[in-house]
Length: 196
Image 1 (cartoon, helix red, strand yellow):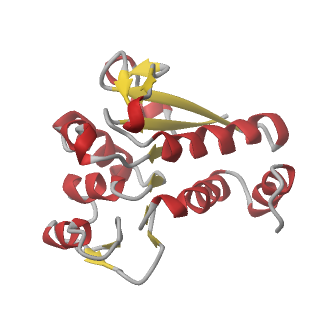
Image 2 (spheres, helix red, strand yellow):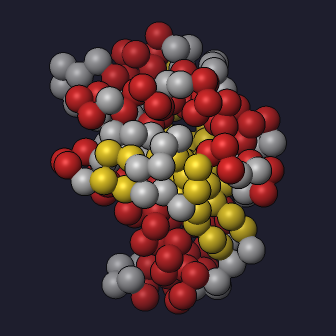
């Protein structure tokens, strides 16, 4: 069984987290049943964007990171205090540990800024939220990343970053394929109603 750590910062966007839980849930029941997703936070209760609350399955201090095979991080909103957790040393240390072990890391939208802030993308390629007059890609460049502004999703070795919430399902399916197989991913998509 391959374990995915869904790392949740306070202020995360619920849609971006739900695609991970749904796709890996479908794989557990309708796919090859080889994956398990565990939501982990820095607090017992997390505030999501848009007024939701979330109770993660585990607290970061309770887990052994070495038991996990991949890391998934949804983005969030500054107005919901996302960057307080997402830029904290505890959060960034998790990212560094996964990268040091060359394990897959998938970040949606502004979660790519956490990856950049950790230093693991220094000199490498990536992307983050891209919208006119928005400063996020500039911030990522200032953190030493070669930003690919014209790409929705960027893969650099073990790290997947993306440019908006719209990319979320594609990011998750890429991660599922890395952890299982192309054939299994196609079957999960088919069972979920996507045409392949």
